[in-house]
Image 1 (tube, rainbow, N blue to C red):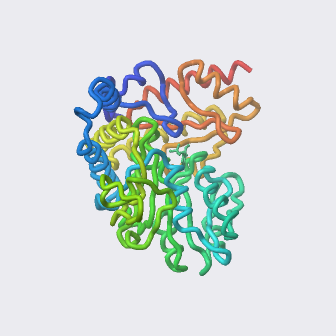
Image 2: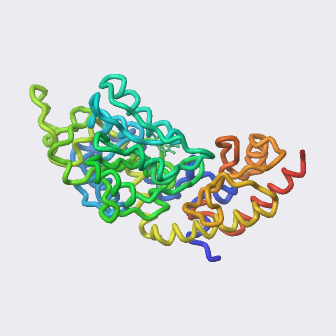
Image 3: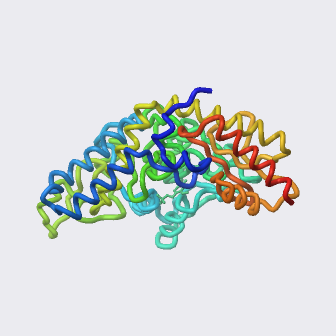
Length: 382
Ligand SMILES: Cc1ncc(COP(=O)(O)O)c(C=O)c1O
């Protein structure tokens, strides 16, 4: 199996067997440099270099790279600080009323559900969550909860705990049949799984930047389809929500005419520049190439884990849907296994009483073999 990137592009991988992109991915040296250079320039020169035009250019570059990643138009992209904030703004924007409901899942990442629970406390809408046995979202159960009173179906593209990938087109078909919007959290897929918001008919999508996009904390992306631009009123609002951000007219609120109405204040601009650099690099490598490469790594991992008797929490581990592989080791303290792997330089996360492995483009077949070798030793310890 050929490697996708040169070994020195992601310096962390020269020190660690890093299998933790579902938590935080390491940055490329280019992305880290871009972030640090901006901080240094601001510290030494303030607005002499980073003037108002430069500030606007950061948002423009987020729009360009976001459009490239998602198959969207640049005016459908907003820059954000993190995915949770964007989901809050969307939930308040839609504010489903007393007779309405929102459909999601009990096993979702909390930020996908909490904003709706909060809105429900104010508006009296219903939040319907699938029960999902064994950490698997059951599509039929999901469909059974959607009706003509559903305002939004809100789910992650790829599940943080298991790597289960949902069929976005099937979801948007169900939502749209009932007049609901499909709101997608792509934090566990953007940068690693191809996404086409047009083909999948997605209404709103949010993603963090510090996981599979390999950017820093503090910058994120959001997509809002053009058809919503005239009507949707963001829940979070500030000086950057308007079309003339430097007019500072506080006596009336005129929304920006496109997705940028969801931008409401300053960003951690160095982080935004780092995210743009990181995402451009991934686009150069090719998301489809990354996706196929990562599936190869995950398949090698699944094969090796099977030979040491692992039980998979990841649904259909032999028919992988993303490169997240979550497994339990019978008779073992799972938290201990995860901790010992970390101590041995194999970086993974303990999740839902199991160990979550998440290889990405910077990993190699040797990394997987190395992780499996360490694992075998750790399992023999107890
Ligand atoms: C699906 C999903 N959404 C959102 C987040 C958190 O995003 P942020 O920190 O940008 O709010 C995570 C983090 O694990 C996640 O897995």
